[in-house]
Image (cartoon, rainbow, N blue to C red; front, side, top):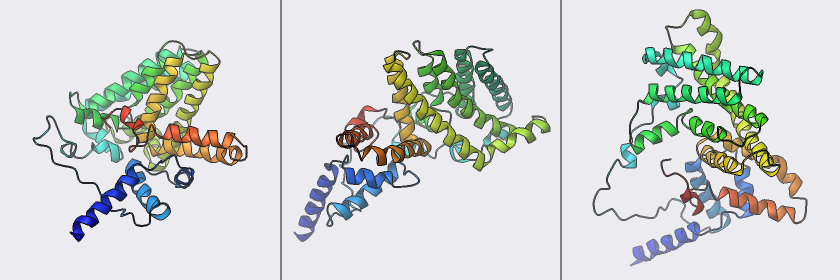
Length: 324
């Protein structure tokens, strides 16, 4: 009986935790102070610890609600059957050295794509031509590393790869209704992603001339990749803000802006660099806006509403793609 009551109390405490309003200013202030920004799995642990310390000291932060087993196995692969993520996600890119002619094809595609991007900024090519070539190069890399399959596990592995979401992002900026200067800016995050892959190919593809490998391979170092990834995240967030301003000024089609920000929600959930970019913006705006009466409450409400779309425990987050 005592055990039953204990389990019941723990369950009630967990229900209170799940129903807590996570747009609370105290939680948001605490979350904004975490550095580096935690990923979604880490956020769940931070929430439990913060809730126990600040809301309910009797809350058991190690408790997990039990789930009844399904009556029969669900069709298709289960989450734990996906196996380890592809080597390219966590490795330094040495996989390029083992796929032979595919690496050569990707090297050629990225060479053309990078030249087209520079040419578009110089006014030689239209920016949408450079974007299309970038998409082709990204798709060739995905096929070279993962092949072509029709399964949820395959889509999951592709989307968590560094180039996995780039064709989707490129598709949003290829839609009509964008100002020429916005299209030129939109080429930059694609260019930086292509540069990262190009550097890894040059380092590990033994079939390339040594002068090419020696010149470009420093881009594959951990330090260089981190700097480029951080710059790319800043550019993507900046592009989104520019597109919002463009929609208000009638320079960008609203549907294109909406689609782009849907991609950015996905980027936020998968990339700590994107989270860091938003956090630095908040760290800049928060001290200023918190001093303005009326604006303070509006800004906090806006942050809470936006965060609800990427919070895995929010009802709004359920509207996003379940592949991730």
